[in-house]
Every structure is written in structure tokens, then in C-alpha cells.
Amino acid sequence: MKNLWTWLFAGILLTVPFWLQDQYFLHIVITTGIFIIGAMSLNLLLGFTGQLSLGHIAFFGIGAYASALTSLGFDIPIFGDFRIVHEPWSPVIGVLVGTLVAGLCGYIVGKLSFKIRGAYFVIVTISFAEVVRLVALNWVDLTQGPLALSNIPPIGFTMPVVGEVVFWKKVPNYYLVLGLGFIAYVLIARIVHSRMGRAMIALRENEPLATSVGINVTRYLVFAAVVSAALAGAAGGLYAHYIRIIDPDIFLFIYTVTMVIMVVTGGKGTLAGPIVGGLIFGVLPVGLRSVAAPEVQWIVYGIVMILIIFFLPRGIVPAVCSWWHRKTGSVPGHVRLSGELASDNDDGANLQESQFVPGKFSTLRGR
Amino acid sequence: MTKAMGSKKPILSIKHVAVHFGGLVAISDMTFNVNEGELVSLIGPNGAGKTTAFNVVTGYLRPTNGEVHFRGMPIHDLKPHEVADAGLVRTFQKTSLFTSNTVFENVLTGLHRHGSASAWATLLSLPHVRREEARLRQTVWEILDFIGIAEYANELGSALPYGAQRLLGVAVALAANPSLLLLDEPASGMNPSETADFMHLLGKIRALGISILLVEHDMPLVMGVSDRIVVLNYGKIIADAPPVEIQQNPEVISAYLGHGVKHA
Image 1: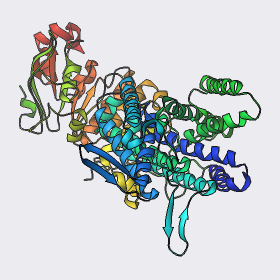
Image 2: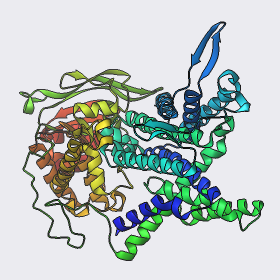
Image 3: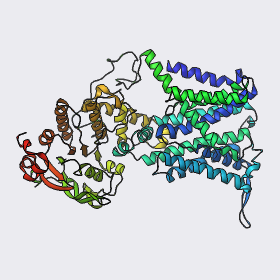
Image 4: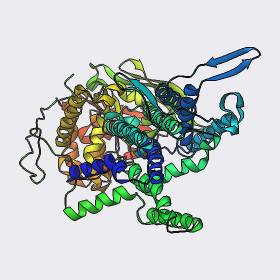
């Protein structure tokens, strides 16, 4: 059943450009997709380690700027006559550079805040975003400050046989975003369902207990910050090469808040949550545009948000999941597998006899 | 005083440990050993410094003075997760669980030390990572069976009856593969039959070759399971002897046990 929904959803995503002819709406879907990747990366920190990064847009913006500057090239004076000159590189390399630089910043922020949790972590991340915004605004030689970086080349590469492929149009950009979104989803899912993910959840749930069983929580918090920042940076890189102009307003607090809203309403700590929340809050404003005046749009937007938080405090996805399990009576759980397959409706047959030997757990005492 | 187990090597040595909180002296001078394979109980009235002693030994608190050695290695400067990594694992006095996780996931998280998959291998989901994961899941069932809470595997930790929550705390600690297990009032809140089962469980844990340091108020339990009892009063050790001697020690009786316990 779950697989059916997954394939249906994948099918819809893959065919969007075929049935969605409205170019403006496709543009909204693309930018929403980019923001959903940002929200997914934020969810790794907020939903799984439990640490709220309210400066998350900084990593996104750093990725965007680093990627744009790598592909535009720059020429900046450092001391007197000493200059750093960079010739333009391919935008593909730009996005990779943006990802790495953002990941490095995530490492630094993670390390700086290794001892602080909760409100203090929030303050560090907000401050970080503000500092980065001021740098982008004032380092005019590098970023052109408020004049914005413009004429950023679109993503493109040279392929054998086909020759040069440049993603000028919306449709290839859509698939690019979809591809990155898929990669981000798979990476986050693998982390979350691994020993590393359990260590992150342990940090969220009960830090003293986590350390008491030998989990170096700081290490996993830093790891989560690096992966989260790198994914946000990659999304920022795509954004820069799709929109093709970026200015320091990209670092505005409202964008971080948008990502937080996407994560929290969708369901933090769930893989699908940021996607559901992102689709609602990315597409809703546009859907409303045709039927309501701008003021009314924002009011409706706010009301929807308050209603979701009020009635579904854990978010949409956990609420739908528990509703589904109540309806079908199935509760997901860990079943002892005797082989590779466990049937869904057979509780007893797959339970196998305990293999416990006194004094020897299979991994515990055995080595 | 440690004649009962005098032939064995100490696994844990606490040497002249003192803990001061500002002007308050929580522990003034504490010295005792736990030997390999031994079950030692640390008892004393409320506020005597038992939990403080636990926090010092497990790295949650730095001693003002003194040293803690685990298998000859100084551990008083280590962080809690490093202490656990050395094989010294504790439980907590208040029920401490990963509350929004199931019992199974709690124990699986406790098995952290048994995994070794690197970040890259995990991101690439290499076959050995998936094998390790399957192996860990198998071990969870073995531990749940061992502790006797397998029936609750898919329940939320916070939804368990209180006694079972205490057992889950022990299961999580046991999952971390300790050579010395520190139990902070594990039987508090258990009914007499649960306590009796718990005594049996302590014996099974010892049979795995795990040494135990127990803080507990339930005197019949302490007297029944301990090789040796260390009595702490006002931050000082006033006795360190096998249970029979402790029950007749006049200082202990006046400080803690009261006169009725002699007949217990």
C-alpha cells in the first residue's frame, strides 16, 4: 500500500512538465522544489537532532553566492596591489563549490556551538546568518553588494555526441531540482535509519542517556550540521543558476522562517514532512492569487498555518500516519524475521526461537 | 575489609575523591574499590552523596580532589561518552528513556558502541552496513529476551508500566556492553514480586561476567545480592564490608539501618 502511494507520487512528480503548461506555475514549482530541499536539510537538524537552526538560509545563500562567484569569476583587491583573480568555471563545478563551502560553514557553526543547545544554538545560527548577510551587502568588490550578482550562467555541460547542453528552459531545471531533491531525500533517509541517525535522535530525546551509552553527541551534531548545510548550499547553488541573479536579500530572516514553517507544519522528524509542508506553503500563495486579493492571501496563509499548528501540533504527516494506522489497525513495528520476508498479517509464524546463549549476545560478548 | 574478594583485581578504584559545590561538601573523602566480577552496593541516607559519587565515576561531574581509575586507567578527566566507551555504563535514578521511541529502538540506540559503519559507507548504503544493521537488530531481540521485556518491543518506552521502564533502562545500559554496570536505584518503584525478579536478573547479568556497582534503598535486595556493601554518610565512607558485618556494624545501624533491620 505504501509502495503504491510512493510510486504514484513519483509518477506525478516525473510528469509535472507534461500536464502543467502554465510556465509561471512551473516556475513556482521549481522555486518551491528548491526551498523544499532547503527545508529537508533543515529537518535533519531541527527534526532529528532537535536543534533549531534559525539561520539556515545562510547556508543556502552561501551556496548560492559561492556557486555564482565560481561560475562568474571575480577580481578582488586584498592588500594594496595584491589581488585575487578567479577565471569563470563551469556552473556545474560552481554548484559543487557552493555545496562544499556551505558544508564547511556548517562544520564551523557546528564546532562553534558544540557545547550549546536549545536557545543558544538558535542565537548562534541567527547571528551567523546576519553576519553573512552583512558581508554580502558590504563586500562590494566581491559581491557587488546591493547591486546584486547578475548574468549568472545557467547550469550547463558538454556531453560527448550531443555537444553543449545548457539548461536555459524551465523544464530541464525542473528535472535538475527533482534530481537533487531525490538525492537529498535518499541521503537523509539513509542517515536517519542508520546508527548515526539514531545517535542524532538520541541527542534530541535524552542527551544524558545518549552519552551514558557511549554516544559522542557533539560529533553527530556536527555531522548533521555539515550534511544539512551542504544540502542547503547545493539547493542555493541551483537557485542561483536558475534565477540567474542574487542579492543580499537572499539572507533575509523570512526565508529561514518559511523553511521552518514548511518543516514544522509538515511534521518535523519525518522524512515526508518537509515535502508536504513545502508543497502546501510553496504552492498555496500562488493558488490563492487567482481568487483573492493580496491582503486576503496573506491572511488565509496565516490562518492555515495557525490551524495546522493548533490542531496538528506534531505536523501533518504524523497526524495522517496515526489516522491511517487507526483506520487499518496496523501498527508499524519490529518483527523478528526468520527469513528475508515477513508477511504483514501473520504475527506468530515469523517469530523465531531466541538465539540467546547465556554469556554471549551475538554482537555483545562475541568479540 | 575486602577479604571476601581480596584475591581479585580491582576493576574500579575510587581514591580520595572529594566533591565540593561551592561551599557545600557533597563528598569529603571517598575511597573504595569494585573488584572484577563483584557486586558492590553503595548505600547511605538520602543526601549522603551516592548519586554524586555515580556522577563523578561516570564523568558527569569532575571531582574537586582525588582520582578514579577504571582497570588501572585514570577516567576522572574523561567525558561521559568516553567513560562509557571504556566499558563503564550507568543507569539513572529517575527513569531515563528515549521517550518518543519504542522499546526496540531504545535498545537499538543503546547498541551504538557495537556499530562501526563510517559516514561514507552509510551514505552509500554499502552491503556491510546493511549486514551490521541486521546483526544489531538481532542483538536487540536477544537483549529484550534476556531482560524479559520482549513483549513490549513495539510499545513506546514512555507507555510502559513503571517497573518495565526501569528494566528498559537496564536493557539500554546492558546494550552498551559494559564490563562494569552502575545501577542507580534500579528497583525503586518496583513491587515486591518485580523486585524478586530483578534480583534474579542481577544474578544473570553477573553470570555474563559484568561487575556491578549498585545504589539502592531496598535493604532486603541489597543484603541479598551484594558481595560487599559500602556505606556513605555525610559524604564519608563509614563502612566497607560484606552484608553480614554491615548489619552488625553499630555506626551503620545508628546512621542508616535503624534497629529493626537486624532481624530482616
